[in-house]
Each structure stands twice: as structure tokens, then as C-alpha cells.
Image 1 (spheres, rainbow, N blue to C red):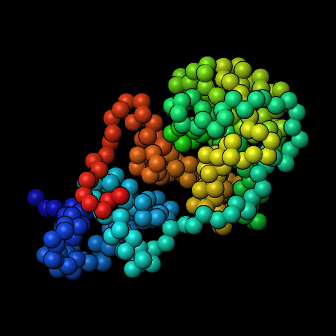
Image 2 (image 1 turned 120 degrees about the vertical axis):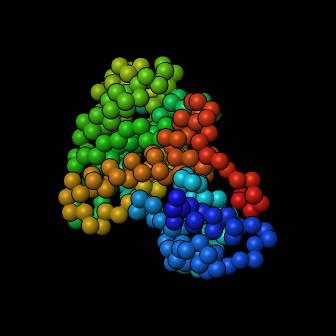
Image 3 (image 1 turned 45 degrees about the vertical axis):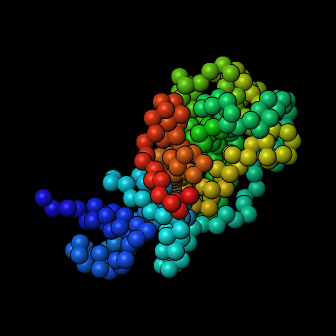
Amino acid sequence: MSVPASAKYSIIREMTLRDNNLLNISWLCAAAGVSRSGYYHYLDKAYLYRGYDKGARGIYMRLLHLDPPVHMNIKKIRRLMKKYKLFCPIRKANPYRRAASALVTAGTAPNLLNREFEIHGPRKVLLTDITYIINGKAPRCYMCTIIDACTKELLAWSLSASMEEEFVLETVKRMADTHGVSLSEETLIHSDQGSHYTSVRFQTLVKDKKLRQSMSRKANCWDNAPQESFFGHMKDEIDISHCESFEDVLSVITDWTDYYNNDRYQWNLAKLSPAEYYKYRITGDYPLVIPKAKGCD
């Protein structure tokens, strides 16, 4: 039975990580009958998995999700990234103005959340906001999202070419249709004080879905920090430079949101993707085998 190259690469990685290893990668690749360039291409796939660059922790988590999993020391990953000039995206100051904060507010809800984003568990705190998507070529787009504050999972989103409130209402409806069974009458939906969220139609819809409404204090982005962080990471990672139409932007966002929920692993989510982390919190079944070798922290 032939051994797949990926399995050989995995074994080579394990051997090079041993404290007493005296064998170099070139010799191991020759002995295994694989090329040295192929081995590094194997590592590079983790860096560019699904087309999105990753840092050392992102590569480490991606390698743990391979079948078979690859256990690689993070310090080694950083050395390889430096050697082969692999750089992760650096968070930039957000160049986009936040849509909702520029709108006139009407009736507001109290800040029931009080920044207690995670302690209540999954599906107890939902965060929502609106942002611009701009590249100078495609029409300006507006995106509304709802995320689970505990698991960071994107529960629903809508993209619109207009700031009319319909796309915000549609986002709530999609979230309720898909995840309503996992919500309770104690579930909060938290937003800023933008006019979309103070509108009669939005507040009526929230009540119809048996959710409690909460709002950030005026001009206080920290009251909705995980949502702000979500938009920041999304804009760092998507590439809309080639987009010339609304449909082009929609295609990019659709791919990234699927990647984010299912394949974008987060260190603070037990090294899992948001969707995996939700299942873990609900079932208690952890899907990965984490090595205890020295230097993996």
C-alpha cells in the first residue's frame, strides 16, 4: 500500500520537532521519497488555506485540523515564516466610517448587555451592526451582520446597495429562521443607537421574535467591541480590489463568511472555528488532539 505524500510530510514534521533530532529536512525528504520543495509547499498550503493569509497561530491551528493532524511548534512556524517571507495581515486603522453612528437616533433601548459578551454562554447575546464595503470601482455596499458574542459565530448577514432598513430587517429574519430554535426569551440582541435599530419596524420585529433589545451607550464602540473586531478582521482579509459590481462584492463576502464560520480558527475559541466552538460548547466533545510537547504555547 502506497503512503500518501501528506502522511510522509507529517512524519517528517514530527521527526524534526523531536528534541534529539539530528536529521535535517533535506535528508528526511530524500529518505521518504518526497521533494524538499513539496514539503514546504505542504506547509505553505496551511498559510494560504482557502486563499486567506494567516499568522503563526492560524497556521498552527490549520495544521491541527489536517487529516492526519500535524503538530508543529509555533516557534518553528515563525522561523519558517520569516525564512520564506510569509507575512500575516496586520490590523490597520479602519478606513470605513461606521454607517449607523452617522444616522439620527430616535427612541433608544437601555444598555442591558453591559459588555458581558461571553459569560452567559452561546446564543444568549447577539451583536448586530452595519458597515460600508467600498473599493472605488464597485457600487458602495452596506453589510448588516448578527454574531453570537460568546462563540463569535456569524449567525446571519445581508448585503445591500441601499441604506434602506429592509436589509437590516432581513438579517434578523434570516437569523431567526436559521437559529431561532437555539434562542430563548432571555436572548439579547445588542446594537448601537443608529436609526435602523431605533426604528419602529426593527423594534417590533425584535419583540415578535421574542428577543430582548439592548443598545450601546452613545458613541461608545467598546460596548459592541466583538462586532467591531469582526468587521475589522473581515476588511483586513477580503480582497475586493477586482470587484466592479455588487454581485462581485457579494461573491467575495459569501466566500469569506463561509470561511470565517467553518475554517477560520481562533486561538481564544479553543483553537476552533466559530461553528466548531459552538458545537463544542453545546456537546462538550472537543474535536482536536492538542499535543503537550514543550514549546507549543
